[in-house]
Amino acid sequence: MLDFLAYLEFERGLSRNTLEAYRSDLLQLGAFLGRRGVDAVDVQHADLSAFLSPRKSQRLPQVLSRDEIARLLSAPKGTDPAALRDRALLELMYACGLRASEAIGLDVRDVDLTLGVLRARGKGSKERLVPIGREAVSATKAYVERGRPSFVGLGDEPHLFVNRRGGGLTRQGLYKIVQRHARAVGLEDRMSPHTLRHTFATHLLAGGCDLRSLQEMLGHADIATTQIYTHLSAERLKDAYFKAHPRATSG
Image: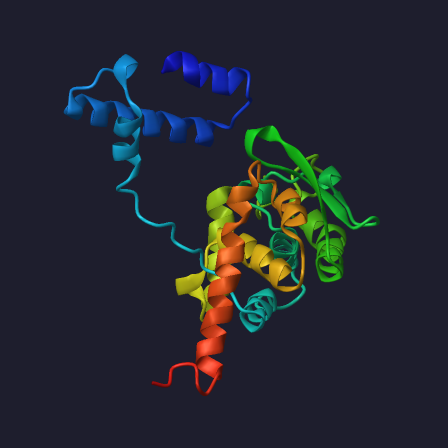
């Protein structure tokens, strides 16, 4: 197992979180095989199938409607530095489908507001370019010009999003920002930073974006991961249909 994990880390360049997930899965498999009295070198297809079969069906992620995302993005009020930062953070995460780690990992030089594009560093340190929408460009520009300097002063902090002390924003800090504004508009029970990424993907598909382009923008290595959003879109369409059609549920 250690040789395999070393291969994944040093040759494949997978992230620490991904390596930990593989390690956990392998330990579970080892324990399962031990209970069946099967040595790892003698494992058969049937053993692997028995290990995988009990898994529950994949749960569809939470997604906000267009009205709900508009309420959330308008939650940071005022023009003080914290409000400018929070507005830019929420707009950029929704505009680009960023993971929490990607958002807090952004450096100032990763965002080109003139071209309207940013460089995100995803899993396995893989980089990708993602377009930035007009509203997110405007909010980020306001933050960079009028908000961020109040936090960093004359310091040389490279991170785009910083806390009140001028240091890079942490994952916990990001979570608190998202929750605070979600609570202000009554969405706290449905919100996490990842909800913005799910909402980005679902809204793009609903607007006609093709699956391959969405895969590239999300930074998914496998398009099968991206396909969950087609299922999500289908479920939302079905829900809207059965709520709206007068004969959809008639007997």
